[in-house]
Image 1: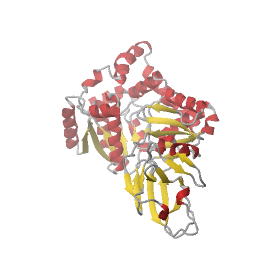
Image 2 (image 1 turned 60 degrees about the vertical axis):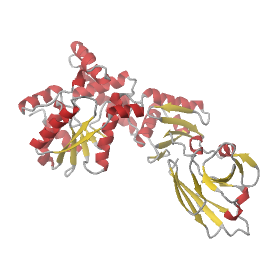
Image 3 (image 1 turned 180 degrees about the vertical axis):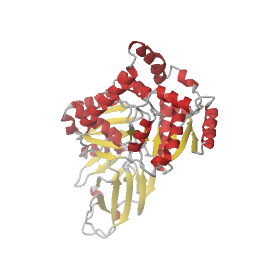
Image 4 (image 1 turned 90 degrees about the horizontal axis):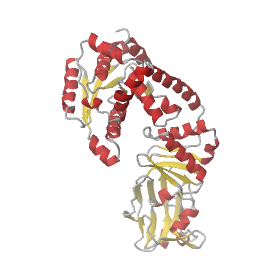
Length: 449
């Protein structure tokens, strides 16, 4: 079909020879037509095409739709991966709407397939009407230029949308010409869902007054994308500290003096750098900028999906809250201790008193009996190196230890007296002198917190 040549042209730029493309297929007309077409051109592109079907456990007919997709794949000799996610449980446990939970679960499954090497790309059946809905929805939610750009033909390097510049009419014609059957998702008529409300209630009324509004919205998105990409090219993350493992990113506060369009994109890139793409809107960007102006160390704001931003001295830190682990304790001996969300604690005998990077050395013979590694408790005290006893909290504040990390830093202590604060300092009481022979070294390998 002539119009579907656009899909072929798009695919030539979206995939490489030898790649495995997983087509997300619900059994609806868009995804069935995409699966059918990509399967028909796979040899021309030298790719393998497989099907990925996800049952979101929302509709009574979901299993029926999965059976339809499986039968379609069998008839067309397409390998099919099928999965079930409990969207209601995800919504409840993550405090999301059902719509958000289904999307999160779906994309997590896609990323898992990529990570396992079962597919190289995931092809999605979005088209011009979907793009128009997305652009309009983002504008109505207060998005900036980036949000108004809508969906990209390729995102995160793995999600491709080869039908994004194809009209719904072209898809209907393809279905008819190839005599394809498909299933109808009855929830598409449920306008309580945001996207369905725009699709069923708003866009038809706009089409009555503005017959080309969907194409115009999609074109507007493309214009916004080009402008946004240019401004994005001016943004640097050079001094931003990123930790993908702990989902933490630290932005120097002096970066916020740049022009507002640069700052806005810098913040979005910071979120993206730790794989946070959804639910961050313009209002959240403004909240972070207001936090910088507030300026008080320790000031914190709450963002969607249990994300927080906090003023930490010279940085604004964006992070997921680390669960407290202060009920755990360990006997003092050589070995390694994994501290969730912080890093690894290494304890070992040392041959000399020479201090190396990230290490603390102390005289273990000066420790009282029964000393244990644990986390901080109320009433903890610490005799700082050089003399003078302070409350542990006050000492950590003076040493500029971020408040979000204080409960998770391992302490070598007996009763309420702390002798070693891992990664920070040792007590005056266990310092090494000329008679020290039982020397231990402690290294806290933090993950750039």
